[in-house]
Amino acid sequence: MAAADGSGAGGAAGPLFAGLADVSISEDIPVEGEITVPVGSHSPEDDFSTLDEPVKDTIMRDLKAVGKKFVHVMYPKKSSALLRDWDLWGPLVLCVSLALMLQGGAADSKDDGGPQFAEVFVIIWFGAVVITLNSKLLGGTISFFQSLCVLGYCVLPLTVAMLVCRLVLLAGAGTVSFIIRLIVVVAMFAWSTLASTAFLADSQPPNRKALVVYPIFLFYFVISWMILTFTPQ
Image (cartoon, rainbow, N blue to C red):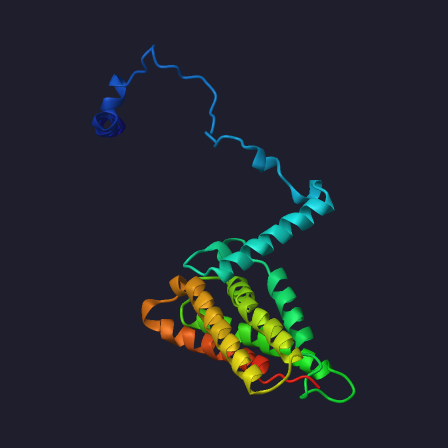
């Protein structure tokens, strides 16, 4: 009985592994060697590290990067230049410059111009954060800090408008002065709005772009209104 079972098991296994007897390794095929993983070509940039360079070179490189972003804002076009290498140095410089130029206005207290300086910071940074969160909730594809970078750099035309208005006010605060300031502020407001939408347009769903542009319009409108209504003490 056991012999019968053994022969039955052998008969069942025989057809299952019958093909293994014909498998052989040719003598021409090497069965030894080294396993290597192909990698890309090594470039000198792979060894580059900012920790090994002088502080002067680091500062100059950052200043050049900020300057290039300023050029992109002054000549706006659909580009990812502000999105690739984002930074907040440029927005910080523009915010401080605008806040300093807005100090000493008639809306300030008699003691100091602190509230005006703080007001500019709150409006710019808090407004930029709100617009960024709105963009993300509507399905935007850029990161939080990339949006802050674009909105901050696009304050540059309004900062130029504030500088021009300060120079015009040195000549007087009459009707002609107001008309000149109005034209300059309106032009720079349109420039800031168009520049920011040019950089952020491709990151929004096509059917929700209007919902993103409207808060941006209000953001730069408030800053423009502060510049236009500024009158020195």
